[in-house]
Length: 491
Image (cartoon, rainbow, N blue to C red; front, side, top):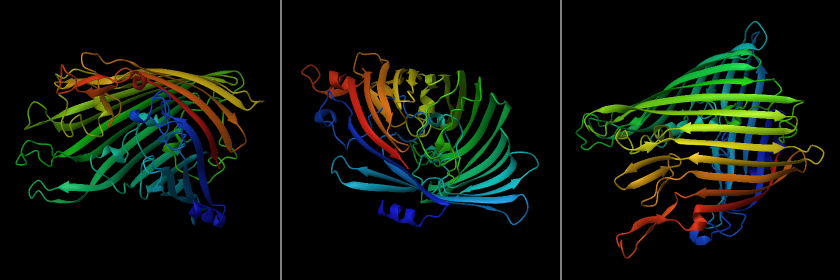
């Protein structure tokens, strides 16, 4: 942070630091204790969230972080041309809860160079954007939780993942094509030796704004995810074969009035030092005069070639699907949101790729998709600068059955085995909170969160089953009551 402060002191009009600082007093589960990995109320342990929060963001609002942005925009040397560029670094300080030692993660967050050629007409141009180090802000899909095509789509650990995007824009209409690369290990199928190899991804999309209240968007992409290596014998002709992913996304959005802005994730936009990006206050509440409705619906479908689970000497195409419907009703200072999300198991596991890495799921395996809905309401008392909110969500989790038992798959890396002789159960989560706007830069937030998850289990050895068995986790682990009290600033 000393570096940030020194740079801020030298910053000119084209440079800024976008800082989020949160002091959070939290407990992930006030009914549990250290044996359940839930310390008593503290300032260190983080991650107390309802499953349906942060749907449009890759970060939760209880962490501290900063984006250092060095930005420049110039008129070109020829009429109608202009350029802009930004060097974007993301700083994320953290505390190690085991050692209580501070640390900082520093990473690129979308540095870019952009060349723009103005075309006849208002808001009409063509541009070429090069993402210098990380093209994670250039993705396919629209709701951030459903987006795909970032560095995590590769089955190997990536370093730099740059890319390039060529886009035509005219008002609300646009079209783009792009490409990105990532470098990872490549196993030569002939020599079995490892070396570095560039893996490619190709993206294209378009959007058509029918009028100020209706727009339609679609995108397609193809990515080299990695190599098939999980074969029975390295002499297999499939050893080292490329895993090629293909998919498409589409969205239709309608609103009754332009006063209700579209739902768009800030993590899909370029960082700019311009008045429409850096505002005097980051605190905003949806407010309109009268009544407005917004509906956005999205569908994503992805497929890739994986090893056939029945025939080890061939591959098969596995396809995953996800969709959502987001709705907002705004009545003066009151906002009510009702959302529904669908993800099948293949979509959740797409980046792994597969339930077993590189192997498609057996079509005879019993499985169910993830389906959840949530409703959240808030009201802003402008004179008091107070906004209470309440939300509740229910999830039917994605599940699958094997000879070892029944499993719930929460995310691509997070799963839980269901207690023996029990069917998977719905997950219920709710929260109630209040935000007090103390100034243009600082808010005070208090939240209570409650989650019921009967799928949580523990491995226990009993007299009847000395080899061990999966039984219900203790009541205070299946019923989680959390709390947050946060002082949060952005400047």
